[in-house]
Image (cartoon, rainbow, N blue to C red):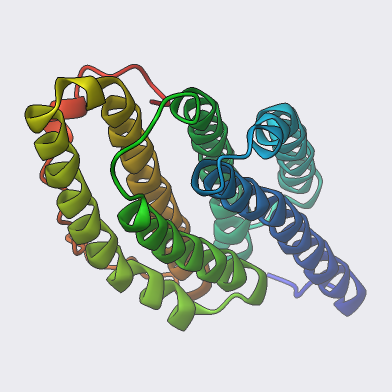
Length: 241
């Protein structure tokens, strides 16, 4: 089989770089949405919460743009082997990013409700969990943009810490609800916010796994550190809650 001319190979490399840059730009929007959603909750700021909800369609639009570009690459370039793996992985990554944007919007919506009622419990645990999730999200997006398998592995390993903190928050909120019936409404919303953060962490890990595979051609182990013990509680929850 004859080798492709160098200018064709170079052109496709430029296309792949553009694809990674587009994903990084979408990732930046998603990172900001998560940050703003938690700021809205912790600072009791309804204006920021509203902005997160209003900006969610921008993330959806960005996903469609990246998807169209990736599909065009598949149709016109007909990549194989490593190149095909990178494009297909990119299509999966943007799906994870879009879902993270949805979870951020959901957190913002719930913060609007929670901030209307008096709270007699601290949100420091949620704030700490959010910082861990945001760091993992940033690292996973950096791994995509830099095609860095080591950063992908770091995110994969860090998921356990997020789950452990989530389980602690879950137990604390359930205790609040048992001790004071007046806290049930707010705590229920906080439980779903914690679950949304946990799911954002899962999607960040998915992105890391996809990136590792795209770069190395190998999959990370099927078993990954996973400590969420509350899945059954939320089994019947609507999608995106």
